[in-house]
Structure formats: structure tokens, C-alpha cells
Length: 296
Image (tube, rainbow, N blue to C red; front, top):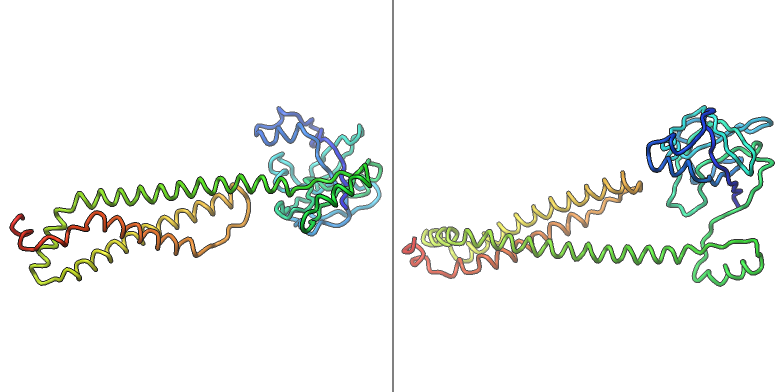
């Protein structure tokens, strides 16, 4: 169980905190809300100190550890003095460390943790997070009936709704992907149709010089396979780079390297190029070489 204390940040180094103090929307939103503070002797397992040191804790000591993201947003530095209004009382604490949190751990995380000595008289509630295998709704309802002051939040319903939204987005992206592939095949077909006469004369000349129809057909398939495979490789590389950038800078989670993306890009690109090439040049080798040379 983690103690939780509601408090509003009112001053930083003696300067009042208001919406006008900050320019960014995130900072203004944080300045208007109450923080869920916590207090503990040991750093949580999913937290990592990135600057400063953990509490020394002792009589008269008031120290705070701040999450690195909110410290950057609110322009907080080590050694700053923060004043929180907790239940109508002002509490001053000194920032002694910043922490990195694992927000995806589904565990209780706090922007600000204060040493226990400074929070000894503050009113506290307790919270925790745990996983119930199977259908945990029945147990949650039983706990709420047995302990009226207990609030149970079942996040599985929220996760299901998020999953439904993600599935709908995936379907839309897949449709867009198929539409793009079809457009690529049509563009390739149109380009080949424009050069069909030239390729027909070239094929007739090569056949007159001794090349067989099978050799010319194989050369075409190799050409289309290489062009399509290279295009698929470039597309997969671009998609992977975009995914890495979004994961790293936008969503802030670790990007996982997936070799199948490149393999799928090469295969799909080659297949689409072969299909488009066959549609555009299927009649090139059917015309007799003598007729082709006469028309040339």
C-alpha cells in the first residue's frame, strides 16, 4: 500500500505559482491542479534516481523527489524549495532528487514523493495496484460491499475500450496500406504501358539476334523483382524509421526491432511489381520478331 496525500503547489523558491507563470499548456494545467503526493522511506522498485540523492530523513528534514518529466515542464531544479498547500497547511520541501518512472508498469507512480518526517501530520489515504486473473469484477464488488470506504477501480474495461479503438485504427491503416499497394500497381502499369512500344521493339531485336522468349521473360521477371524488392526495402526502412521516431519522441517507449518488416516489404514489393509488370507487358513477347522489325 502506498500513502497518498493531496496537495497543491503554491510557491517555487518563494515565487507564487499561477497559470501566468508558465508558457506551455502542460505547465499551466499542472499549476491549476492538485498533486497526488506520497511519502516513503525507500525508493520504489520501478523508480530510478537520475539526479541528486534519495532522502536522508530525520527530524526537521523536509525533502522531495520529483519525476524528471514534471521537473522539466515546471522548470524545477535540484535545491529548489517547493511549497505545497496540504489540507490548508503550507509545507515547504527541498528538491533533492529527480526520478525516472516506468509509466507502463501499471503500478502506483507519483510525480512528487516527500520524506515521511515532513508528512507525519498530513492526512493520508492509501492506494495500490494489483492484477486479478480471470474475471475480477466479482471480487471487486465484494470488497466494496465489505469495506464501504474502499474504492475499487477496474481498469480492464478501460483497456478493452482502448483495444477496440486501436483495432479500429489498425483496420483503417490496413485499408490505407492495401489502397496504396493497389495505387502503386496501377502507377507501374501505366508507366509500362507508356514504354510498351519501345520494349516490344527491343524484344523483337533481341529475339532476332538469338534470344529465346523464355530468356526475355525471365529477364523481365528479374527486373521487376529487383525493382519491387528495392522499393519495398526502402518503404520498410522509412516505416521503421517513422515508427522509431514516434516511439522514442512522441510516445516515450522502447522501440522493438522487427526484421519481418523488411522481409515483408521486400516480398510484397516484388510481388506487386511482378503483377504490375505482367499486366503492362504481357503482350510484348507474343508478337513475332519479324513483324516487330517491319513495323519499326
